[in-house]
Length: 279
Image (cartoon, rainbow, N blue to C red; front, side, top):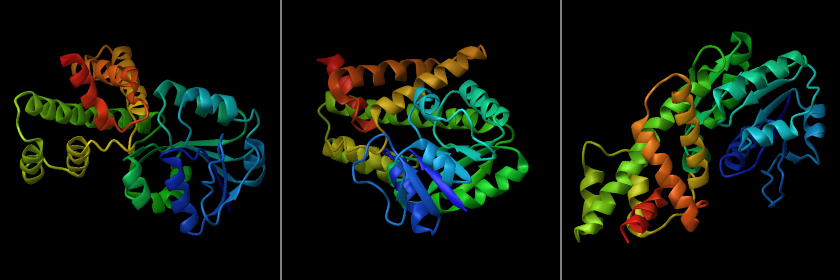
């Protein structure tokens, strides 16, 4: 079975590469051609060509607007797998639209940044009809260390937003710790050493601490993407009447970092929002 893959961005390119490497008959499309077609995959000239040739199509597009702009009106009997991060409401509408057009729909957002995507170590969260989930689990196995069932749509995207709530607050707190240390004249390399050895250490904390100490903000998860996800969390909380005081503050910090020219940098660059406000 030929699989289509739409979107070869920071996350999409390594994900598509892992599918092709695993032997998937893959046809890909992206708005831009940066010479990033994975070895073994075929690049389509249009989205329509992808849907014409593939039985299953994976969406790894950045925004709701991008999905709505490129998705064909007719999807036939195709299985469409949404692996990006949009609002749960958009996912429900997207699923209803695809089913009404004769297709099938599964949510499969992932937790992890570019590094885990390259290593095939993402955590997949899936929601949809049971028979479709079985197919999707097998399909995305080369991309994921674990795939977790989240029930019916939009359960997977709601779960992804819950995960992002912890991720964003954790990395922002880490940046604040380094800002505090800098402000008191501490050696941040020593702070990194203490944190890396302590009980709070994780793959994420070690990676982001290294970025802050080394001023290496090469993108793993970009500020503009984190800001979008943060806004999705806050909006979803408001719709349920839930409080999100930590994520409200984080949203403002990521927005400030983006305004100061760091939108395309890794999320660890949120430390610049602290520095700018101080000076």
